[in-house]
Length: 71
Image: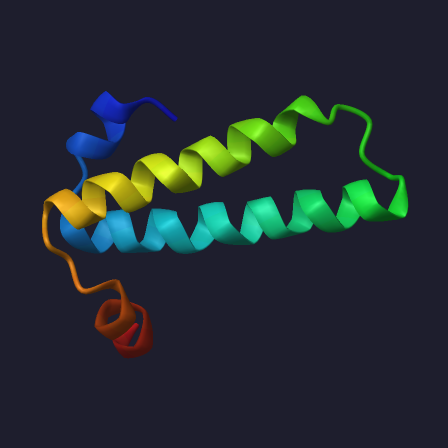
């Protein structure tokens, strides 16, 4: 996911994308731990996506704790 794509998202879309990215990163870590993951480079991509989303959310002053509970 490119940062230009993230910048063009609305706040609600950003929070949803962050939830999905965190879930994807978790699933990749789980698959890596069980030996099912063939391409371990995807782990780094998933972590960087989460970091990009968090950075943009913090720049916009989105209260992620409140947003994730309310959704």
